[in-house]
Length: 211
Image (cartoon, rainbow, N blue to C red; front, side, top):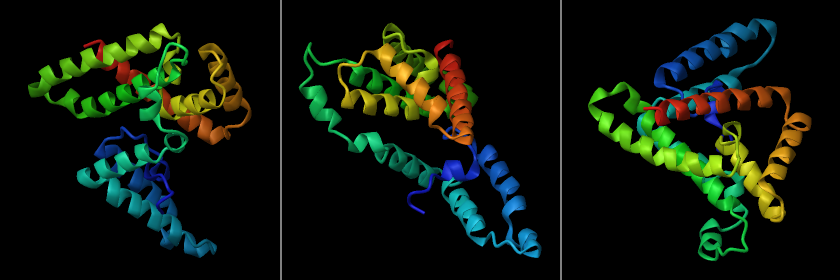
């Protein structure tokens, strides 16, 4: 189970509300409950257990927060090299893509933090401060000519990993490589899910910076 992504199991984004998570769990339970499928000779016990385990974690605020940090900490690109040491040794001859990746990563953290604030009018000042912080990261990414559709963490991780292997690649060429990869190598379902998550993320960014 530890290699499973609970958000993928329930078919929701990492920014999904508790209501969305509960609705997704209920919908999938109707489809995969063993009592529904046993008459057709199909054992869906394992799938149902995964659904319930995902819901158990994601429906608990504390467990979900811990799980979210686990996902971020264990993203494959983070195991490729030591970002801290790279930033310490950064000089003018080193391509700046790590800076762009970090800006996108920090922006994602800000968006995650601000989601519950949109519904709380008493915390409008906090939201304004987060908007200012987010705008700085947005400006850096835009100045690098990286369109918003590439800012989603999974995409930026792919770009960083590819850049690390070929540090002479320009940003525009990296984006072209990603487009080719997404077109030729990503399964259709994964592509649609990524596009959906990226679109929601772009919407959240615009909502925050336009406050």
